[in-house]
Image 1 (cartoon, helix red, strand yellow):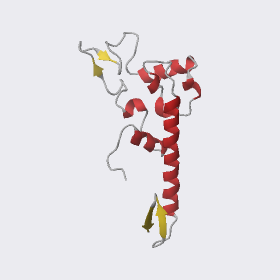
Image 2 (cartoon, rainbow, N blue to C red):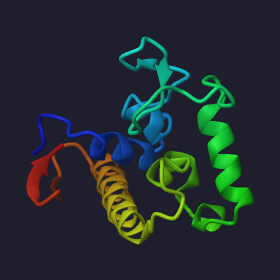
Image 3 (cartoon, helix red, strand yellow):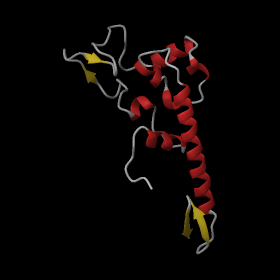
Image 4 (cartoon, helix red, strand yellow):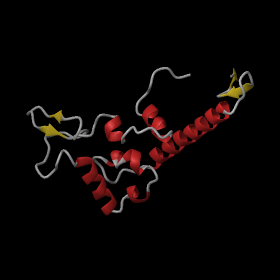
Length: 141
């Protein structure tokens, strides 16, 4: 049993179970449109890079614009099944980052979410007082 959430895993798991969690940019509080970070000079800065925000970058549209650029550059984001939750998060600031491991992790989390959904559906179909095994433990409804 997990009692304390571990981000970003729990929010991604919730997303895979159809919760509206937003993208990793929001989950990890790095979307500059929502969570403004400032450099030592007091000017806006982007997450995970040093220095202030270049003037050609728009804070309110940064994530969407960046993701659109990644798709236009034909990075692996173009065909990635995890576009909605990721939005190019792992390709910032390096668009050449290889997401193979991240895709495997997301697949594992998706499998866990599917198993949870099946177990909960099975539990919900049980008659009152019927013994069922749910998540490896006997339960009575």
